[in-house]
Length: 464
Image 1: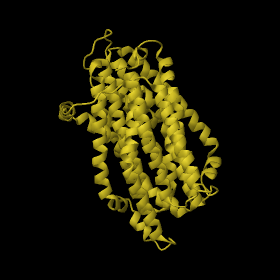
Image 2 (image 1 turned 90 degrees about the horizontal axis):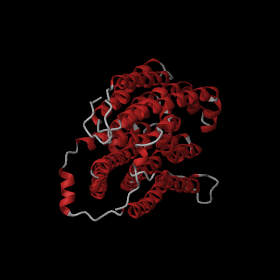
Image 3 (image 1 turned 90 degrees about the vertical axis):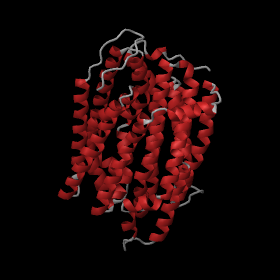
Image 4 (image 1 turned 45 degrees about the vertical axis):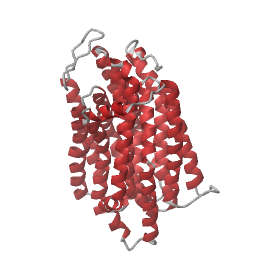
């Protein structure tokens, strides 16, 4: 098989390597996050009720995307480690990773599809639909159900696009991976505008049209991505014995990596449940806020596509001083960029809030969000990038505990206490939770002890 030479990741100036490998994915991640915000904005053009119906599905679709990304991260980490330690088994490792990840999503699809109505009910959707203020609750319920069920059916294809992209990035085909992502998101955006923009001749005022956007783009790019992977890597056919052997290996690390990606959607779901008990306006606001959060954290998100491979190759090759250099550059970049973004947004709050939504009840939530949360994302950004690099070094337990501490142990209790105090106290409370989580990262990095080793040594590093 033919793979790209990855020695460039362990040689040369570390800042140049990070820039070279992060820059191609930056535009791809930016377009992806902008598309997700476009979805919510197009829903807001319809009505507050439809935006709220969409908002109740956001934690579920976020979990679907998170699990797809989780399987992608595990594929990426396994390929990086194999490329360093067992290059001859690379084709087998890629095949096993794709099969295991695909079957995982199939099983989860069957399970969640059978529990679809119960999941929406748990989020408080049934209580909202029974409200006397809704004009046509039965139509909204039908649209919502069809939308979420269609998303379940296309879940396996969403996962396949992410998994193959992660493998290409692990093999240093970053530019190709970026181009695939850009083309994928552009197709989504074009379809969304054709079907969801009121001025379009193909406009279809229904949540179902949004599910068609995802299905068409995800299925198309599953086949396109696999074709490109096969052209670049020349995958070999796996025997039954090889596939069986892959399933017999310990799966704790894989399970924990996937679970880590679920932590954020679980946190969003709990926040939705708490907020729905107070005021359903929160849910409509969350449909925009959850997407805005990802865009504000664009730079840390882009770094998570490149830093695991950079940290992983240097770590498993024994270049631990370069690992420390990469960490210093990474955290400096995140801290400076998030501070600048927070300052910029603090001066443009009214413009963004009024531009994103015309409904006053939602706009006021956006203003409070933009006043407080960007400062908290200085800490959250550090958590995101550090957690992704811990996985690259097989320190999945530490990464999992960090995610649980950030999203569940800090955010949920502080959010609950804040909502009991005041309707808009939620946002400074969330800012505080993110900053505390950032201080936890600072503590972990300070106590980390990665001894320098000669090139080529591969030993177990001290657990952080």
